[in-house]
Every structure is written in structure tokens, then in C-alpha cells.
Image 1 (cartoon, rainbow over the protein chains, first blue to last red):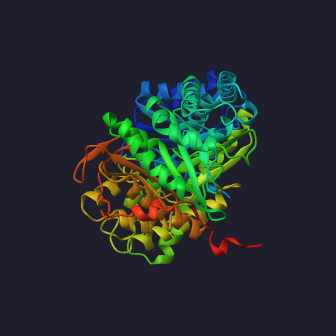
Image 2 (tube, rainbow over the protein chains, first blue to last red):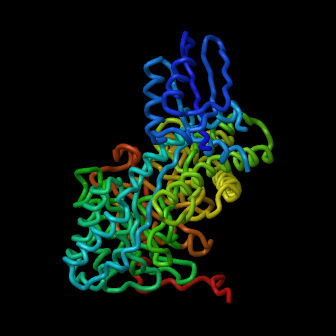
Image 3 (tube, one colour):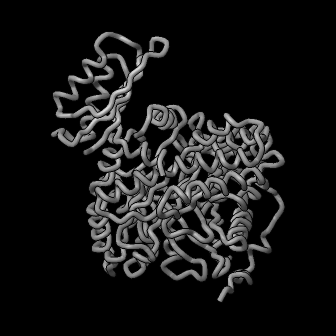
Length: 90
Length: 454
């Protein structure tokens, strides 16, 4: 398992989750957990995904997700979970 | 499982509070390049560096993307060149050729700075050391990315005052040779007491002879993160203040630990240390002086500054030590004047003087750093300032350093511009009274009594 955290933040519109999930499915990335909420018209989503089955390199996935975000009009961050584990767990 | 709040907290630190990994520095030993033929020596040095650091920049960029953490600089440090060139170099000019080789290697590998054009002379100056020291003004004027340092004192050996006297002159000469570029040469030169072998920060980084063939050292930074954390505990007591700094320093250092371990794994190079320093940049919200203000001072330099900085430095270390398996380098709070907008503001307001900065160096990481002084300051006065800072380091068993920029043609009230991460600095007044007779004495100051620990 290679866990990555994807965060999506931006103005809410129709189809954000669909487009993000389509990218993940097309690239062999399995979704383990999703939490999503809308606060004052702003879309906030966090996904825990497994990239172990993805043929593409992590850095490339990160770049492509960022570009997808720009296309949709949201900010997508794709970060390996270790950075959060390291900071918030001993 | 990591939750949304934690992810948001980390990303807020990165996106809004200037959390970053300030540098990944690869230390490379050049001892196996030593040759008595200058041409062969230069060729071996170039090959060694370009081979060892071939993947450094790309690895830094990959790690940065995969974890979403900016890695601002990728740098290299090498064995002090005075040692490497001592068989081949018969003149100072010979040493300058090595500086050019380092510069070329740095450019071809893609790192922005390469440190180690250095000499270690705390007990005595060898012929090769002197040749290198005298070559520094030309080497730094003619190259872009080379950084230089000289260690002139240590708690174990005392202070080499002959070297201190020479370096006052060298700094002035370096300023002269780059005076059309606001004396930028001086920005790339540091003089040390108790210099560490594994400091990843420039300009003082070099790869000490006690180290392995290659090593990865990481310097983190996050003054903005600490400041934001403190802004939430205004008015609280010292216990809360100190705990907040300590916990925040822990989180910041953890990022450095992660990046260091990853870089080490991918490059196949051993992990050396994380240098847990609060290192400011001129960017808004990235200031150590602002932390001092948040602690409760009107400006850095006001009464209470030394105490505030002492507690900040101490809590940074306490939090950071838990966060990393190996801590080293300089580790603490940095106070470079030109690289910190809060410091610049304090100088311009008249709140911060050279004398107060000297006091502050007793309780924090580096020393008198990135300070512009009048261009007509005498070499002996510069040596006197250096001697003071070396004495602080020697007696207090800590690293101290001096990086002064004599602004040729400028005086108090003027400004020097360095650009980018190096910022700008108002010229600060220097005590005008003479120390010529003191600096004129030959020899060395002996090691202090408390260094005899056997």
C-alpha cells in the first residue's frame, strides 16, 4: 500500500468529485477514504488513496492532479501521507 | 488515520506560513582527488562532484512534489579546499582555478551554491591556508556560486589572532573587488569559531574531514509557523509561551527529518543530520525578529531582546531534538540582518545596534550575520569585531561567526541591495575608536581554562 492524501479546495461546482474520481480510476488509484463538506460555498474534500497499483510516478501524478485542479477551478494537492504522519504522530 | 484538521494544519503552514525545507546539502569528500598536478586535481574535482551530485537536484524536486513541501535550495559542500589544493597549489592564483572548477561543477549539476572554499586555521596557518585565504577576494569576485569560510578559533585551541588580522584585510579587499555589485563578494564569506563539520547552510557550509565520503544534511526553517502559533497565545504565561514554541519546532523539524531520510534513501547516500534552525528570509511573514516582537518586544533590539532570543533558541532545540534522529549543524535561531525584514525595520527605527546584535549572538545560533557596515571602516576594526565574536564562541563553547559587508562608497543612512533571498541591508554604524595596537599583536590567544577537561 502506498497511501497518498488528496485535498481538493475551491468554489463548489457540479462534477468536481466525478472528475477527480475519473482521473483516479483511469490511473489505477484506489480510493480508501473520502470525506467532503461544503463551507460557505467552498468545496473541501480529503481523500486517502492507494497508489500502489498506479503505473505513473508519484511526482507525475502530483503534477497532473494539479493541472486537473486548474482546469476544474479548484486547488488539488497530492501528498504522500508520511508528511502528515511525521508531523502529527510520534 | 490522519484527519482533515491535521492535513489542513500542515498545508496551512506550507501555503500561508512559509514552512519549507530551506536546503538539502550534499556533503562530498574531495580527499580522494588530491594530486600534486593542478590540472589533474581540477579535473578530478569536477568529475567527483558532478558524479556524486548528479541526481541531487532532480531528487529534491521529486520529493518536493510528492510531499507538497517546497525544498528551496539544493546545495553542495566539499572538503576545505586548503587541504585539497595544498600539494598542487604554489600560488594564490592556483587556488582561484579550483574556485572556478567548483563554480563550473555547481552550475552543471544545477545547485545554486557550493561551499567549502575554506581553511581551518584555529591553531596555526599553513602555507597553503594562507595562499587560499589571500585568494578569497579574487575567487569570490570571479565566481558566482562558490562560498568560502575560515575557522580561526576554537574552544580547544584558542584564537589565531594572526589569521583574524589577515581576514579583516581580506574582507575589505573582497568588498573592494566587488564594489560595483554592492560588495556582494562579502556575502559569500564567513569567518568562524568552533565551525561544525556538517553545517548545511551557506555561506559557511563545508564537508569536514571527520565525515564519510558523502552525506545528506538538511536545513529546515519555519519562523512564520512559530510566529503564527505564538499569535494565538498572546498574554499567556512563560510556560505556555515556551511550550508553544517547543511543539511548533517539533512539527517543523519532523518535515526536515522526513525529507532527509527520503533524500538519503533515493540517492543512496547516508543521512547525516537535520539542522533545526529558524532561518528567516526577506519574504513577509518569514522573520525571526517578528517572533521576538510576538514574544512581547516593540522592536528587536529593545531591552529584553537577549532574554527573548535565549528562550526562543532553547525551545527550538528542545522541540527539534525529539523530532529528529540526528541533529547537528548550527541548530537554533538565526539573526541575519539583511535576510529578515523585521531586523531591517528594527535597524531603521534605531532600535537595533551592532552592540546589541553582539549580545544576541551569545544566546543563539550563528553570529553577526549579513550586516552592512560603512565602507571606510578600518581593517583593524573589522578584525576587532571578529575577535570579539570569536571570543564569545571560544569561551561559551559554541559556534559563532561573522559575515560583514563593508559597503564601499556608502555610509550610515545608505542601503546595500543583495537581491533574492539575501535581501537588502541598511548600513550600520561601527564604534569609531581604534583597536590597532591590539590587533597588531602577533600570535594566538590561548585556549580557555575550561577546555582542559581530561
